[in-house]
Amino acid sequence: MAKKKAAEPAPKEKKAAVKKESKSDGYIAKAPIRRLMKKEGADLVAAEALDKLIGFLEVKAAEATKEAIKICKADKRKRITASDIRNATR
Image (tube, rainbow, N blue to C red):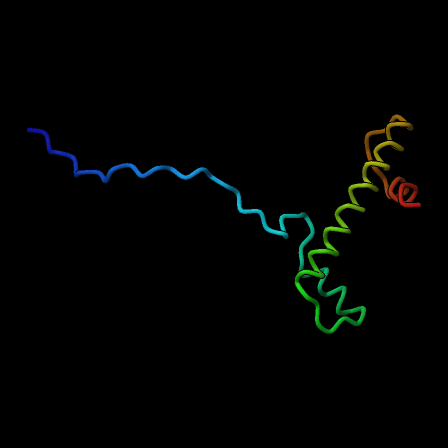
């Protein structure tokens, strides 16, 4: 005779997988930016100030990258070089 399976609990209503969005979902790590700020003389750095600066840097980096891509496409190249970034940020 086959063994009976253990009684499984009634399936609970599955919650929708909601990604918890935090302010630090970006690409730039907090620690190096905090060290840079301290190196420049900021003894205490608030987390909100750090998040704000990281957000600003990410936006500026994205803008520079888009402009550098335009420069590369105009020159019919695929690789972004340091000079492309330098020209894009001028």
